[in-house]
Every structure is written in structure tokens, then in C-alpha cells.
Length: 527
Image (cartoon, rainbow, N blue to C red):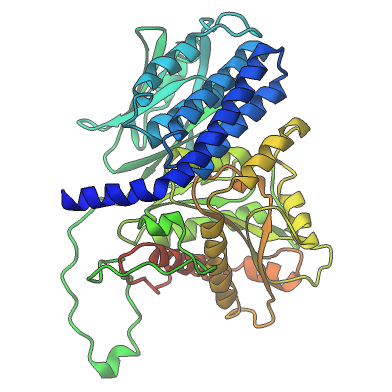
């Protein structure tokens, strides 16, 4: 109790200055909102008010005004939806309310969130009429994955849905709100069972809800992401090896034989007493390090895919190469205790840039790494470089961002929102440090295969795939497909394994620097 009182006293003594500043900003945003509501506001003005509220939360996350700011911002966004009928504003309102409930669960406003979200879901749209018009679930399909299946659910438009997984038997179900199953969807269910999917059921539930149930084999892992135009909810199901008891300690190796015995994979383990985390590269301690936060779930993003093959030269195709590297990296990471891995894609499928970061946010990732291969106008250009999200200060970085963002499909009116998200990036220090570690490890690794490779350094650029990430993130350009020597290396399994090993080492080193428990990392390679 004495410790709690002491902590409360410390917080109370240091908080007033920040609270006053947060209060002033909140009152200014409230006055701007009042003025906007009294006029005939354009949608851009209302979105700027929302951004003003969100800036308070980003700068003063522990202030007593932050939950109020999220509440107000959500209602301004919904007011924009009611006035202008653009569903993106309703989605913004729901996102902000969900953030409020997640970040400030003990506040009085958090208890009002479920009812308010339900009201927003049932409200009338000025553009499309009553929201009670049912969304149609038109088809459910199955396709094969290397280690499982992919179930794709096709709907007329994006629905509100709830996902839950239960055991006894193992079942995964989705409740789609305000939705009905079309007759065309039911015949396909008979063809879905098989592999990791034992049975599929589709049925109506109360309050115009459609439930899809997947009965799964034990030891099946799942991930979910959305695709658009048309809207599809994609469920990837994979077999995983059942957990087993830890192996008995191996007999010690005589010193004379130690050099000839390859190192065995060694899972991360507690090495004893907690160790203080290292400082950020700028000498300070980020809030994440002050709070002793660690990394448990990692999202790996193989760039491009599907109708977007990425860079192609010298008979090398970026999308296929980086997917192979990502799968190798996943295999290394899954051998470590306390690490969960999610891939944004596992096959040659197109996933929009914005959706890749959304997957990481939905999965509650602690770290996001996007893997790409580079291209240069000069075929002699070579080497590796790593990026973190910020405004570009380098012409070459600008060119790389322009190429990688070409498939984003964003419109010019989104520019203010993108600028705001970059400017309010509260993971900047951690992302920069993660990128530095990735670059150092990557360069050291590829030099073992190519002594002439160039260290192109760590750079900053506005990559769409990193915008909106709620966790430290980086983008690695692992080699140039336009360079004949590097393209030839990329087409070899040994070189791709070396890149995967280098990225693996970087992730473990970053994780160890952040978490206040010393760890031992694996140096083993997998063929």
C-alpha cells in the first residue's frame, strides 16, 4: 500500500503542467467543434477537428482529458458521417470508441462504448438510406495453402462482425451483424470440409446476424484479414506442431569435440535477474522502455504479391523472393519461446498496403517488419538499406517510397490525414532504433556472400505500408534485383536463408534491448 501511495504522490506532483497543457488543447478543440457544428461544415473541417482531438491523445496519453478527447472525436466523426454519408467517417468513429475502451477501460466513458457503437451501426445513412438494409453474404470458398487452407467469405460490403474461438471441440466462429446469407452461399459449404476444417456451418442468429462456424482440427492456427473491391474476409488456417514437454538436458560436449558439433537451436530463456533495458540511440528512454514493455507478437510482411509482382529483373521476381524469405524467418522465430508470428500473406496473393498495417494492428502486434527487394535505374546499384516511417530527407529515399507506394490506390484528399499520421508517429524512436539494428545485422549477414555489397544505411521515408502502425516498424530492402550479381544470389536458397537469419538476429537483438529480462538467442540456421 505504501508503494501505491508513493507512486500516486509522484504522479500527482509531476502531472499538473502536462494536465494544464492537455486541458488547454482539449478546450480549444471543444471550442472549434462547437463552432463547426453551428455552421454548415465541410467534411474536411470536421476531420480536422477529429485530428485535433487525436493529437491530444497522442501527446498526453496519460492525461485525464484523453478519454474525453477520444469520445468527442468519435462523435465528431459520426456527425461527419451523418452530414456527408461517407462510411469512412463512421468507421473512424467506431475505431476511436474502440481505442477509448481499450486504452482507458476503467473510465466511465468506456462503459458507454458498446451501446454507442451499436447505435452507430444501426443509424441511417444519408447516402444509402436506412442502415437496416441487410448486407448479403454471397459466397464462401476454400483454397489450399502449403500447410493448411484459406477460407474466403465474400460480402456485398464491409460488415460489423465479432470473431471468437472456443474449444471442446475446436471451433472458430464469426457473427456478421446486419447480414443475411444468400442462397448462393449455402451449396458451397459442402465443398469446404477437409484438411484442417472438419465442418462448416452457416446459419441465422437473432437481430439480423449471420453466423459462420468453422470446426477445426486440433493444433490449428488462424489469422484473419480483409480484402476490398469486392469485400472479402480471408481466414488462413495452418497446422502447427503440437506442444511437447521440453527435452532432457543434453550431455555436455567434450572441449576437443566442441568445434566440430553444430550449435543447436536454443530457445529464449530467462537468464536470471532482470536487467535494465538499454537506452534509445538518442540517449533517452522511450515510454515503452520506461514501462518495461517487450515484444511477443511479430508481424512479418512480404511485400507485393498477386497482380503486383514488385520489382522484376534478371529473371528475379520480388514478390516470390521476399515471400520465401518471410517464411524462412517465421520458421526461425517460431523456435523461440514467447514469440508469436503472423504473416500478412502466405501465398502469391495481393494484399493492399493499408491492409497490411491494419492486420498488424488487429493482431495486437508488438513489432512490424516489411521485407522488399530493391530496384535501381543504374544496374550497378547494390547493397541493403532499411527504412522507418518519417518524412523523407533524401532524394533516393523519396524514389524508393514513390515506387513502393505506387500500388496504394489512395486519393489526393487523403494527404492531410497521411501527413497528420506521420507527424504524430509516437513510435519514431523505437522504429528508428529497430531499423538501425536491422540494417547492421542485414549488412553483416549478406557480406558473407557478397563482400562488395554496399551498406546504404538507415533512411526515413513516408511508406504507406508503415503509416498507422501502432507498434515499432521498419521496411528492409534486402538486395537489388536489378543488379545481376545480387539477383543471382537472391535466387539461391542459401542467400535467402542468410537474409532470413540476419533479420531473425536483428529481431532478437531489438527484443533483448527493449525487454528488461536478459535472453539468449539462437544462432542456428535452417535449410
